[in-house]
Length: 59
Image 1: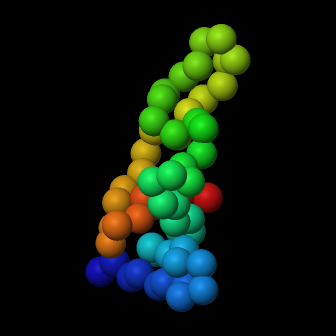
Image 2: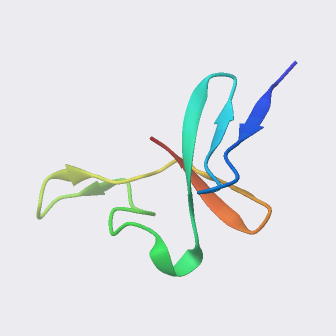
């Protein structure tokens, strides 16, 4: 059974011991949504989920 614990102050959650940070649409990091940037040779964020109007990314 999955357990979800929420932090009411900053809306971060913990699902089965893994911490996720909450972002609003306008506050997403620049590395969100791409897999690999060949120019800067950096990895992007390619896994996230939406819940209750916020986007959660693993810390």
